[in-house]
Length: 322
Image (tube, rainbow, N blue to C red; front, side):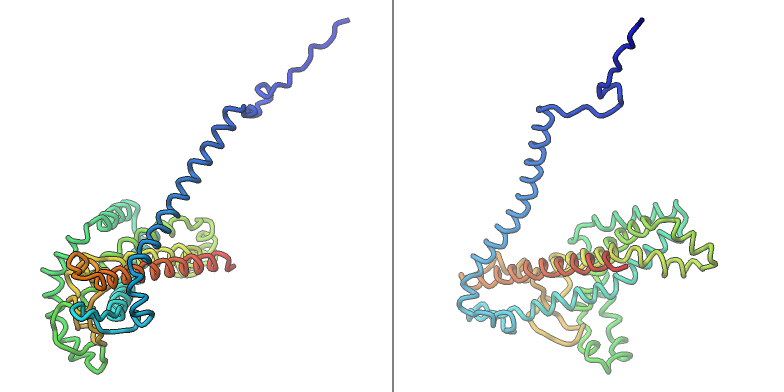
């Protein structure tokens, strides 16, 4: 009588993955430590930046205090400093840029993702991504030689048509908040369009086909399916672009006029936080002036962190919303 051969139950014969050995487990631990160190370095760099800005601006906060944020006088000769004109110029120019770029960017993204043929969509998307790589100084030159003369020519007509509003009054300088907002809109438009297009392309086709089967039009599918599905990504694109607009320096410096005054008119010259740092840091004559400029940098850093934090919170709530 013959006995049956024992059945081999090794992991290799069963098709199961081999049990990792000590060396592989050590490799996993090493990999985890390395990537954790990389993440910690990013946080350490941000903390070091905040510490250095706080340390460099300490004199301003001690001598002037919170009044620095709402004071409107900027006189380095007499050591009188206030950041409100720069806060105003930064936020107003960024708001103008968003008002122009968001509708254009989202609309072009809808066309590229939902309506355009694949060849046209890919070609135009590539061109949009190239626009995002154009150096800001080149856009600033375009603003100086093309945009400023065009705005100077258009401003008298805006005054005649909309002069009953305080935003469209004043001398047609060509440089000012309106020009800065226009150049910023051109800079952030590629980010909004490119990111929104990529998000719209992730919408499941089955959801759109189900609505088409019910007799919906293409606009109804975009409105009821694509935009609600992609809303968190669209908001992320908008806030990412806002962060770019708040911190833009060179192009804005070349077209905004660089005057530390607050005016309701969009035609009036103004100043931004990034522009004043770029213009005056190398020429800061005294410690008080240097400390005030670093304090403006700290304010810009805090504003950027707060806006990005609010953006993450909004996106989180949108993703949780049914």
